Structures are given as structure tokens and as C-alpha cells.
Length: 277
Image 1: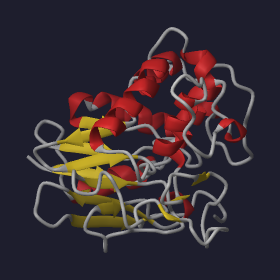
Image 2: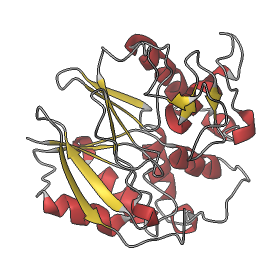
Image 3: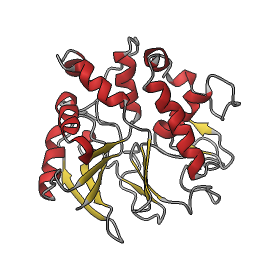
Image 4: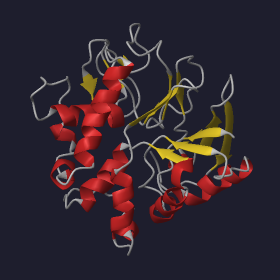
């Protein structure tokens, strides 16, 4: 049995199948971890979701910001972006079935035996593993509840607090969702910058979420993540592995085999589905 983690798919079905063929992926015995952003920007989000859903327990997928964006649409949210490529999926006869599958995916996954965790974007510097799991579960509970549509309609950039709200603040769940699905830069004491996509952070005390000196979770597991195409493949850190190598932008679709001492990296070249990043 092999355990593979794959970077952001974003509706790029052909590269997904191509890289899985390259490693002879067999869902009867292998596992595929997906770091989120399964859909949007690429041409075949519908095919991607149908395929991943068909894998059953062989697929472990966490939710990314584009996946939450799809759920927002499915919940009746009005916000759309110029580069969205979700229309085919939203009009599909099995849309409801796929949305149900998607909203029951976790935001965080931990395999104790492998000593690997998976999240789409990043983690709070002050959260230990138990707290991360609690925070993720709080959001998952909202997404999987009867009131999921009301929650998903609030998933807009302007709604995300930059620091953790108090326990009883209703925006705390939005903050938790943002940390796990949108983090790039933050400060050591947990102030997050949701607006910066790439380049240098505007404040000197901001660093990539995994680069601070004190990280409460650092000694508890290694973290595989996606979300940051501008930073590209990150393999030079002992505690994190970044797999968003920009497939949808004409980069590569990257797999990492995790059930070995040093992750084995496998990738395929992709045609750009978007004109520029």
C-alpha cells in the first residue's frame, strides 16, 4: 500500500489522471490525500469531483478555499469571480449529491502512524495538535449541519477577523475556517493577513505561517499543505511539505509519496488553464 498526497487540483482532471497513472495508483490498495482546492479555475471540476467521490475510502480530501467557494454558491451565495469555472458543476444533475459529499469532507486530517497531518493552507502558530483538531471540528460541524447554507453564505473575505475572536464570538468559526483554508502570512502572535497572495508581506513581523521560531504544533507532526502556488513546491523544510506547484497556471501537478522516510516527489507538466496568476 502507498499513501500519496497531491497538490491543488482545481478542476484539472487530465493532469490528475496522468500523474496517478505515472505511479500506477490503485484505489484497491493505495490512498490518495488531496490537500484541497479540488475545484475551480480549471476546466473539469465536475469530472474531478465525480472521480474523487468514486474512490470511496481510498480518497482523503480536506477542504480548501475554492471548495468553500463552491459550497457558498450551492448555498445560494451571490458572490462570483471572473475566473470561476463552476457553471457546469452547478448545473449538473448530480450536483446535490456532489455537494453533499464535499461538505462532509474534513478541514484537517492527521495520520498518527505516518506522523503526517494535512491542511489546505496553514496553521495558527499558537495552536497545538489537539486545538487544531477542535477548531477544525467546530467548522466541520457547521458545514455538515442543517444550517450549513447560512454559514456558507458568510464565507467572504471581509468577514474574516485578522486575530482570533473570543470564544462566544460568532465570527470565531469564520476565523477558524480562514486559518485552515486561506493562511499564507501571519505574525508570531497570530495576526493573519488574508489579502497577501504572494511576494513580500507588508509588515516586517509577518512571515510564512510555517517559518516562525515558535510553532506550538511543530514537534507534534509534519504538515502537508497546498494553497500557495506563488511559493511553489516547498521541500526544504523538515516540518512542512508544500505541494501547490501551480498546475492550473501552467506549472505542474505534484504528488508526494508519504509512507517512506523521505517523501518521494512525482510530477507532470500541465497546460495553463488560466492566462496568468
